[in-house]
Image (cartoon, rainbow, N blue to C red; front, side):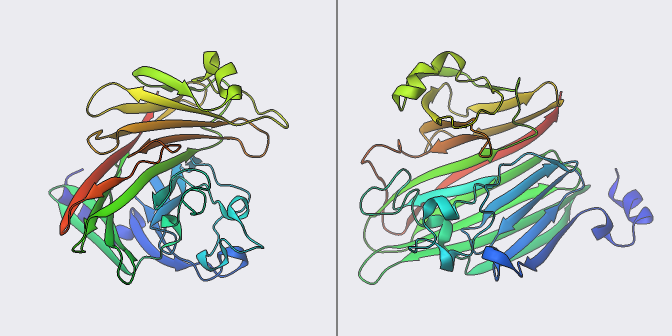
Length: 319
């Protein structure tokens, strides 16, 4: 709709699209700052105190994301004897793994690394007109620093617009130090019911696949198919090589009439992991672009006073 025509009908644009600041007030999430973003079609919650990650994600109020039994957990409770990784893993639409680790317990670091526990030191909220598009943009700055050690800043910008079916996530990883910075990154996108349901499927242009476990190897024939949940069932993990410089991975549910996809630059995100958890109660699919394989000992590097940029576009489509 034309911007002027819309302004004639709406005195306050927040009746159509908004960004709202909030703070969780109870339970394990008590005290955690968050941003509620709603563009009229897509709504999601950005967790400021958990690496500027995204918990819930909805399209026309239909849930798309997997949220674990733990829900959002305050980072001050995490990695204690009482609240280990499995008791604090939120899942959520986006759970950022890194910068010190992306897989299981490795390098003396916690599972999936510490990035998701880094609180945002600066939060910017921008709402503005770009022609006839009303843009909603939130930016968070996360600082990974140590005395005599790294000084790496992640500037994450999440952008959408009124009635758009897309959300863009842009990370600039900046090495502010005067020594080379080492890092690992994995973007753990997690999808759940009702998008994840029996009959849904993953669609991608796959060149080759390596199963991570013997159970995964036995399940390769059905690795792209979504099954009904099963009690006491193992998880499956597959390492895919995708074709192209800007691959797209799609999760399609014909019965629901919805598809959700991730498109990203493979320049820095050279690996892709599929996580299938078909077990009852923890029913989820993870689609995970990454800078390195989670089981490798590899790290990427950033030269002093330099940066790298990763961009991922999430899109919902009615089918």
